[in-house]
Length: 480
Ligand code: XLS
Ligand code: NI
Ligand code: NI
Image (cartoon, rainbow, N blue to C red):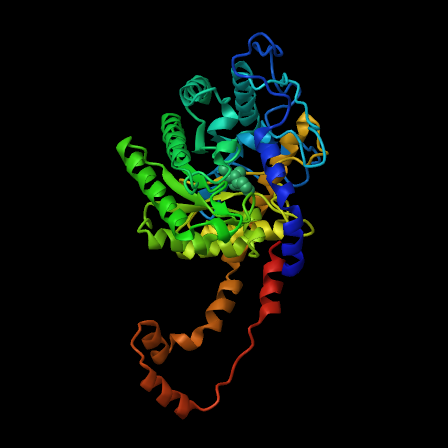
């Protein structure tokens, strides 16, 4: 299976780049931000963006209304905490408002009524208004963005920064007192200057440009009251080691992270810095491969304590893990900071960014979240997009509703498992031989090899008990 996957991966390498880019760069014909009178009319938008879509309410599991929550009841308490405080949902601007359905073989399939086919500043502002109406109607209080999905690139860095400032000022006004970014980030992978990477580019001018972009993106995240800042290593990786100085690139990445920590402190930004692991796409090998690799990077460069991890379920499976594995690895290292809630397709080998609708997976995800005591100041960001063939405006709502309901159902199930206690008891029993005097000595690091050899001889051949896997699965299933 893994052989087949890596074969497919090679064939698809070119496609993957374009798929990722297509989605994030949002392909409808673009116009320069100074329109020069040549592009469509991006003026003020009259009335609602989502007419006919009401504020989404909880109606319970028997409801047949697609525009209602069946399992997510924001104010309901589960294990002593309101559902909305367990979940801390966020929408991803780049998918929800810049995703067009472009793929390697085909053009955009989605033309939202408010889009005018340009990438103008006026269009960026109109889109931002749509974002806040969407959040309001969905009852979600957080959003995530890249600098370049919310405001167009200018001809110079100064011009790009000015564009960003203008859109951010509007976002600040529209946020009101309730809505905040869950996190912000810099898009360091679409522009051709980043083809060799950003912090790991072989070109020093690119390193500097990336630093300037992150500096600005951190400032605006801070200004908007963002709670976290994400580093996803878009092109921080390599295509071949034949032309790559691995040690130098990793050292550069570490220096970049240190400078980000210093700047964060300088501007008084208290948000958590998060590294988002991903094994490949767009590069063949991404440096932040998985949670364990990222944890080791942080440890090696003395950055533990300054960063946590943003675990994305689809990235977990690309790395050959389950989402649950990545969450638990992050958690036991004290690094679980945020979740990019999505899922891949077992028959397709890339980052398909689908909404998570698998109840069993959601239950395992929530078991980790509960063990972590929640995710705050992190949360669940729907880094997920509609399928190319889903083209109605209401599909944007339906997709988020089912994503929220699935995780809410996962939370209810995980709470049942915890309250029932049989699964925890099974695990505890499994290790009970270590609750003995000698077991305790081993765990405290006080049993040397000579002592253990003596015991092994005295005890003779060990009697090894059953792992009870099917029983564990039976208990798990009873909660679904
Ligand atoms: C891409 C990543 C990206 C990050 C934000 O695969 O998931 O969307 O979450 O840059
Ligand atoms: Ni992500
Ligand atoms: Ni992703």
